[in-house]
Length: 290
Image (cartoon, rainbow, N blue to C red; front, side):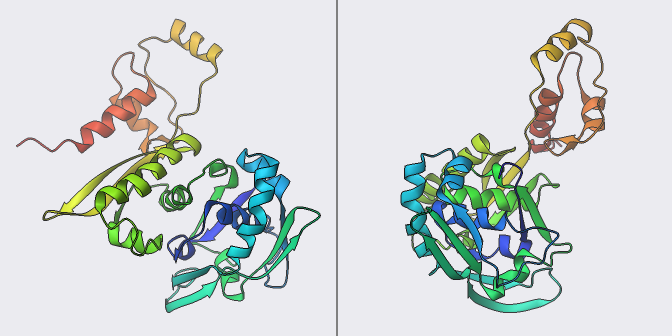
């Protein structure tokens, strides 16, 4: 499952539902087994074992085994509220449905097989434009279900480097109901742990700040981008010996959402890509002086 990919319609990314981290692992592991060259149907069973869950999450096999059955049983009862059609081609009424229609637990084999609900199939297949893809490994080590959801919301807007969401919408999407009504508790138990895990375990770095409407905190702004890939130590030493003060010439791709051509043009003598990018981000946030 090392190179397994997750495909979800953006409408499902933004749907309202609540799954525990164990339920998330089961669902995502099964989604990753959907072959892109074969149609997903509501007739096929997708199987995942406790061994696979343990390997992908870095947990003990015994722990994975204990949680697998309980998670699969709860998953059968879980519902999801969908607010848009799979590819955004026309609005739909709010659709309340279930993730799965069948769960089979193999006691001796320590594995679970599930059949996705009929209404869920279009949100996991038949995807043309409005969908999000990411690697299962990106979230495999997370232990917070909120972190998985936050990562998906950021991955959906991966090319922009910023996403602003209202707290009311986020509470609805995460189905927090009456939990954490105080903004301090909401930040302490939902936002901050999710941010920490996205930064620790995913390919993205993320920062956040709150925004007020009047005196009330109403929105969160997430600024994010791809983490800089580690440069081999030998290459770093050679660069340090021969290129100190030389202009940055790699113009492929972007760092923290900033095109490398822009980073190169704004770099100061001896300043690396990452330092330049972070400085530009900081400067962009500062209010203009009149």
